[in-house]
Image (tube, rainbow, N blue to C red; front, side, top):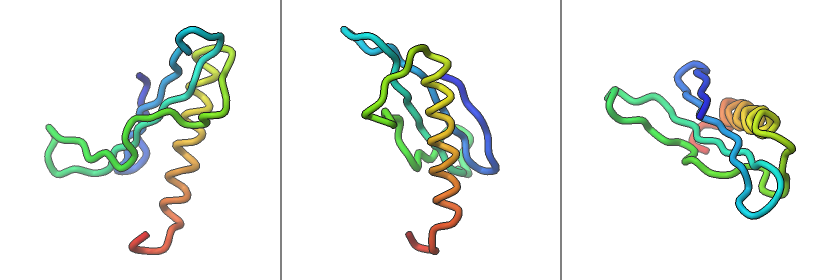
Length: 83
C-alpha cells in the first residue's frame, strides 16, 4: 500500500485486483494526528472508494484513490467547525 503525508494527515492508497473478474478497484484510508506514535487515528477507515468503477491496472486505481483522498481532505478542510 502506498502512502502520502499531507500536513497532519497520512493517506494510504492502493489498487486491488478484483477477484473473479477483470479490473482493479481503488482503496483509501486516511489517518489524522495522534499524540501516540504507536497508534494511528483513522478518520476514514480503509475501504473501497469509487465503488461503481473498475480500472485497467493497479496504477490507474492507485491514482484514482489518491485523487479521491485529496478531494476528501479538501472538503474536510472547508467544512464548518463541528461537522
